[in-house]
Amino acid sequence: MWYDMSLFSVLIGTLAFAVLAPVLGCLLAGLDRKISARMQGRVGPPLLQPYYDVRKLLEKDNVSVNSTEGTYVTCALVFTLIAGGIFFSGGNLLMSVFVVTLSGLFFIVAAYSTRSPYAEIGAMRETLQVMAYEPMVLFMAVAFFMAAGTFDVAGAFALTAPVVTVIWPVLLGFLFVLTIKLRKSPFDLSYSHHAHQEIVKGITTEMSGRTLAKVEVMHWCENILFLGWTGLFFIWGTPASVLVAVIVAAVVYFLEIWIDNNFARVKWQALIKSAWVVALVAGGVNIAVLAYAPYLM
Image 1: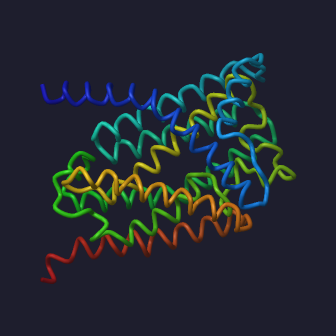
Image 2: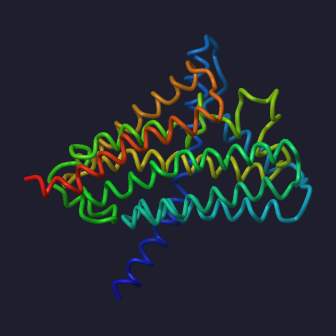
């Protein structure tokens, strides 16, 4: 019975996420362009320009080099929606992490399936990015479990204080790799607006029409999910904490936009080294302290 109710809540959460996340993600993408333009001394496109772009892509003929590319991208989008549904329905945080990682792997396979040299280079860089940020994301989930006593996101509302009070180093480490997951400079290596001279359009070089539209919608949903993970650090047993989490997520996203517009892109070697060092110091040390603190008291 409990399992059926949990599955039902995830299903409802997934459907709600599938409706609301693209809308909010589209607005965030438009706001990103607008703020970036202002930082660069430009007027910038309309707030709904991302929606106009996706609508135009949906109206185009679906030209693809094979029949499997679109299937892989569809799977990536579906798993992203499921990951968001699991998280926002109060489900298992670790499962949400695993499912969204599976989505990223389908996206990589979609690029590899085209056999395009530019897409393959983009896929290689995307794989490196996954290798870079995944340890810190896993540390984030484990640290949440050690602080809250459960992997269930809903368990945060039973706490007397937000988990950030005891795992703030993990938050700092997660914010570092969040730049990678949001595809912002200096870590936008695979799908970069600043590396077209190297890889054209990177991992999405051979994608167009509805396939590329699904990729854009997937990125919108990912942004909402990742900002939700950020807000989770500030949730505790009071309804006002939700507002605090939303404000923190908004501030973090603005900070990511500022970083994107003020830092030059780095090489993949620096990406791997910096992400793993941050994961070891911020994540590993914090988890070790939480694990051994009871024995030292």
